[in-house]
Structures are given as structure tokens and as C-alpha cells.
Image (cartoon, rainbow, N blue to C red; front, side):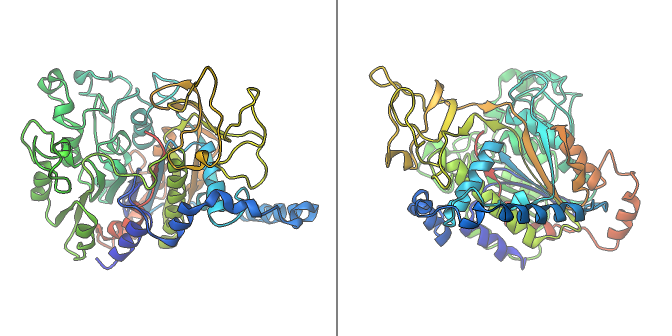
Amino acid sequence: MPQFPLCRWFLSNAGLQKTMLISRGFLVPHGGGLQQLNSPWVEMAMLDPWRLPALLSPPDAEKTPGYWNKEARRRLELALALQPAAQRAKNIILFMGDGMGLSTMSAARIYKGQLSGGLGEENVLAMETFPHMALAKTYTIDRQVPDSAGTGTAYLCGVKANAKTLGLSGAAVYGKCRTTFGNEVDSILHRARLAGKSVGIVTTTRVQHASPGAAYAHSASRGWYADANMPREALRDGCKDIAYQLVHNTDINVILGGGRMYMTPKRTPDPEYPEDPDQNGTRKDGRDLIAEWLSAKQGARYVWDKKGLDAVEDDSVSHLMGLFEPKDMRYELNGRPKQARMEAVMLDRAVARAGELTSPTDTLTVVTADHSHVFTFGGSTPRGNSIFGLAPKKAKDKRAYTSILYGNGPGYSIRDGARPAASLPAAEDKDYRQQAAVPLETETHSGEDVVVLAQGPMAHLFHGVQEQHYIAHAMAYAACLEPYATEPGCRAARRASRGTQCSPQPLLALLALCIAALIVGG
């Protein structure tokens, strides 16, 4: 596989995060990292990025009307020249930032600009250059504020569903195995594979997590990772765990992420942590799903570390599974909210790299989120203020506070009957927890709309305010997948691609993109 050096480049410069793709088929990304980064770019981030803009001030040119008029004219000319790309897509790449709401995107834009030594606000993310945009309503059938399972079913399977259920219609009831049967809905990834396309999933969580799981599983509970996580009643009624379905439901060419422990028998030592019994396999049925997967597919290869991934270079590999942690992958930064902003920046770098490796003439690229979080930043901060810095004025209680705040979560704190004052340099530490208004063990999702950005064939279908399940339908229409395989233009698209044999190699070439995406929440 001559393209694998690209994959290794991203392993050393971006870590593993959330992504999915259709190459002559379909890929879906999802989010944490394979290793700590050692690149100069990250070293700059790890030094003191929040202090870089302190020496800067807005350029004098911005103080003149001509500056803004010229910029507006340039953008207007681009808009007037924009024409819909009505041809069908050969490839689809979906970048899904888990929890990447609009406030997170805005903060990531500023952070990325400040990492480059700028003020930050004027920065433009690669994903923000996409010409077409929509908003998606994220509620599920039963919840105003959604979870990743219900939303994953929407944007991958094309139907709204109930929270905590995967790949099932709204007729299924959470936790009730028997409501699974007859209510299964197939994802766009599954339909792409049936159409002969190569497909892949990459995530920085466990591959059995709700977001990637919606691409292949039908489960009444997002928590049924292995049979050990299922109630006896569900097992007796014939339901299968998510790890089992990963191997047996859809013929996926590329699977990268975490989740080793759910694939092997109970007490099987983990290859990376053999002395830690907490990382051992958990399966009670005694099945080795990795071995089953390898034996069932000619040309399959399994790896569990970067060394093994680097060794995959021969053209005989048609299927690749890489499970790099017992559970979820590790984050690049282990603090919050800095972790979320860094992962969003990493996602954007991957989006930019995707643009370099593909062409918008045949590849539809979509960037979106499953839901948002109760994250905000404000406080009348001045231009160029560190995104992790303090508001310029104290609050009504005469105490300082950070620009970034949460509506709820573990950051809530009362000491001696009052809110602790935020201070520097403590607030700049990667382990600092920004304050929250309501005490909770973990911060919750939020219910506002999320953005959908698109470029490439049929990208103009993403417009206005849409229900989240519309995303799957727009992608299916663009790629002539069911239920749109006989729509106008699809027959010609199939004739054009009939001369070349469908191969997983284009998908494997795009593994560099799989090493992208992000996780900013669960």
C-alpha cells in the first residue's frame, strides 16, 4: 500500500480521532489520541499560546471602512460565482465532531489563530471555507436534549429514533431486547457496502461507542458493548452485543479505534497492559471476535499499535482492523476545556488535509456534530484575549471569572459560602476546570442546533434548517445509494465507474483522514 506513509504522517502529527468515509464508498470519523504529539506545532501549543496575542493589537487597516468593504466585495464575488455541483459523488467523507457545537467551533477558531501567533478572532477554519451550510435540529423522538446514540441513528440511518438506541426506529424501546426485531434501520455505510463500495470507520472512542456503532449495529441499548454488559433477559431473547455486530453485521473494510476488551474472552490479557487485570477481555461467551473476523475475510489484517500499523504495506490487505486501546482512545490533552479545543483544532487540520488528498469534483465532504454542550464564552473580553483567559471585569460578587463557563458540570464549587475567584496562572493550566452554574458529576449535552458544512457533488443539498436525519438522505442521494439508487443521473454515474474494479485501496489511501475527527464530549 504505497499510500500508507500518509497514514503514518497523521499518526505522528494528529493522533487517532473520530472519522468516517466512503471511498468509491463511505467513511465516518469519530474521537482521543494514539500518542502524545511531538511536532513543533503542538510544542508551540503546549508552551504558552494564551499569552502570544497579548503583544498584538488589531491592524490599523481594520479601522478604515475600505478594509471591510473590500473584504465584503471579495466574498460577494465568490458567492455570485458559486454554482451547484450537480454530478453524483464517487466518494463521501463524513467528519463528525462529537459535541462540537457552534460555541466550540468559534472557540476553536480563535484558539487555532492564537496558536499561529495571531489575535485569533480573524482566523478561518478549513471547514469554514466550505461553500454550503445548514443547521440540523438534534432532538430525538423522546428527548429535547439528545444523546449520541439517537443522533447517530439520525445522521447515519436517516430516521429519528429514541435516545440510547442504535440503528432502530422509534418503535424500539430502550433496554427492551424484543423491540429490536422488525425495527432495524440500515445506515448509509451499510447501504454503501451493499452497493459494492469500500467503507470504513475510525473513532477515537471505542469502536463500539454509540456514534460509530450507529453505522453497523441494531441495539436497544448503546451500553451493550459486549455480552458481559447485557442483562440475561436480553441474551435469552436473542439480542447480540455491539462488538459481535461489528464483526458480523456489515463487511467493513477499515475499522480503527479503541475497544479491545469487548472483543476477547474474559480474563484474556491485554497485549499492551498484560499486567493490569482491569484491561483484560470481558466476553462471557468465550468468543474471540478478532480471530473470527480474521478467519472470515481473505486479506484481513489486525493491529493493536502504531508499529503494527506501520508494517501494513502490502497490496494484499483488503480489510484492516486496528484496536489501539482496551476502551476509549487517549486524548491529546488530558484537561477540559482545553482538551476539547485542541481536538477541534486537530479535526480542522484533518479537514484541510482531506481537501489536499481529494477533489471536490468527485468527493462530497461533510462536517457536522451529533449535538452540542452547555459550553459558552463571554464576559466582554477584549480582542485577542486568550480563549482560556479571564474576563476583564469582576463579577457582582467581586471575584474574577474565566471567559469560558459551563451551564452545569463538575466545575461548580462553593468555598466558605462563596464562589472561588478565578486566577492566573491557575486558570491556564490544562487540568483547570472552568466554573459551572449547576453541580453535576459530568457536564451534559445541550439541545441547540448544530452546523452542517459541505463541499463537493450535491453539497448544495445542505441548506437552511433541517431535521438531523436529513443528513443521511442528502448523502445517500449524492452517492446514488438506496433509496435513491434509481434517481436521475445515477445510471450514468454507474456506467462511468463500471470500467474500474471497486477496490478498498482508495479507502486505505484515505486512512490519513481517518486519523482525524474529534471527541469533545460523549
